[in-house]
Image (cartoon, rainbow, N blue to C red):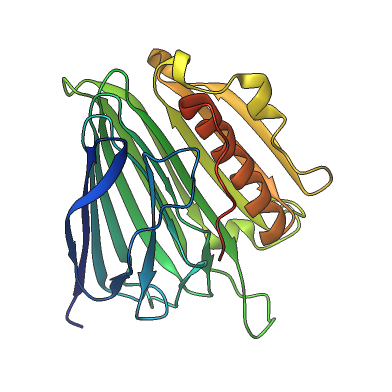
Length: 273
């Protein structure tokens, strides 16, 4: 089967009090509508919705994303909905993301969760380079679903996240590989929880929320959160288990809001989806 390739590339720059989209390159299956200015109290923050024209991720796809945030610019990139990963029949879909955030910049990259269908096989990689005073908020979440309710599971999911400083030195590496069969029975480490999410909040401590505030972002009865300090004083690492998509969205929104409050002194407006 021939591989399908898609690119989603965005450059953000600061003009006066506002961030603007300076360059974009978007090819199938990605789609991009206009950017939105949703926060009157945070004029520098530009929000974009990364969309798909194909209905999910499929076997053999090789997708790449590249985001550059120039000095002082601020961007929030999310998706319009969850992304389905379809049966890959042993041939993985691959998505690689490259991020660069320059001095004083802010980027929140928070796509909605992946939904892993039976046979789904995704290999994801992300590498980011950050200036010393830049802030980066990353979200990576997934759930599982069998449309026929027959107890079938995804094939595998792998993720490799590498964070470097502007000098190229490794600050953080967070990687895992999950095999679907390991999550099939009641001994699954996810237990009753339906959504698993990982967050990295990176930057200088003076521009980040406190550990106590982050820990309080769970949804009572709907999610649990663990917060750990990252190596090399890089920021915070967070794991979250949520009972359903609604609780997962609430927890993610609370974490994003805390980041904006710490960086800009204001909470963001709700994002409609």
